[in-house]
Length: 229
Image (cartoon, rainbow, N blue to C red; front, side, top):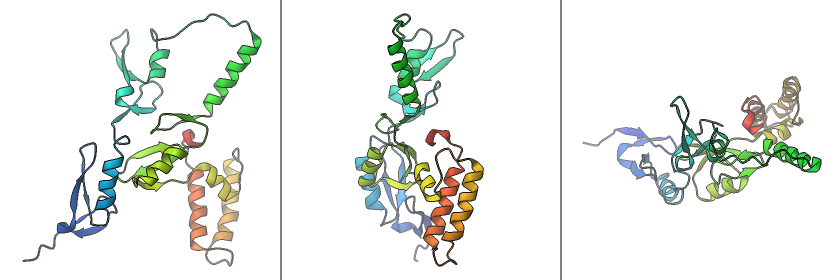
């Protein structure tokens, strides 16, 4: 009797005969069921992406995501235990703060303010843990984890074959709709309607791919995640 049972592939999501699925163990111990087409990619990813599969957890201070090994446990006076990244741990009461006293040099004070402004425009890559000024890529890996990667780490992840999807960055979305970074919601809406008319497949200047690109750009700019703004 032929076994006609079927199940979904954890990689591509296709439904295939159960006998065609192969279990692949990822670096974190999780097993994924892969069809013949996805199996080699999963095995290659399992071999190369051990650094991306290290367990991560949020910092109770800044809420950023860090490797669990990097987090420090802080015990407050009321007994509450917080897991903090090195920066938050140092800034906490009793942390490794240094007090060099007031600064009398006006020039030094201006430099400090400028550095703080620059830090506000930087974002932390979840892979290399480096602060970068470039907008991060929101990447979904083949095992359905979400990562925020700098351009260098994103290219490396793609070369390693562990990227399942890359969400459009807001900078590209603004270019598609031809709006400025400080555009209002109304300006974005008007730009979308203008672009979507030109990109519609029924128009001579349009196509399905262009129409989809404009829609994706508009949806991306509706995202309220200020971390990627």
